[in-house]
Length: 203
Image 1 (cartoon, rainbow, N blue to C red):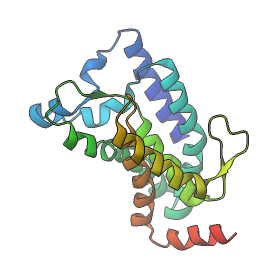
Image 2: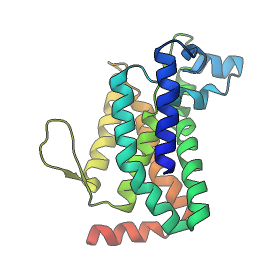
Image 3: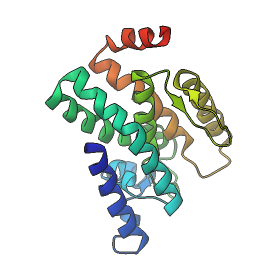
């Protein structure tokens, strides 16, 4: 339910920006404006804005499938009420944490902008892998699912490599740090989850 509410809110804001009903330029991640003009709201608001319908659809589809997994496990691990609160805190904080690297790297670049919930979605994806490391994940053009414990290191390696090459407009650095945060946050809150993860791997 919480995941659906988050998706609806993101879709509403993104669509309003698509049609010019909201000024998306005031919401995007701009490291220069955040660092020098102290527009700290951009550390979170950028996650509500997307660059295209495809960008929005892919992020929300991923969030829908994997967010429900994490939303189900958090109450099981932390209790019903605390689990829901921590899930919201986890998602919102992942939006900011995933862009800290870009904030530092591009703090003096007035032209660098970023939008989208991809960093937080990566965090959700990796948290779901922590809970269910053997679950299958489909990758483009590969007709069979890849187990999460195999997908995770490959994804991190890919993000790290593409971030170093810096040849496209995709926020690979945010994906990388978001994914790591998706592992760190649950383990900080419940360190014994590491043993559960290892038990799941043994299967």
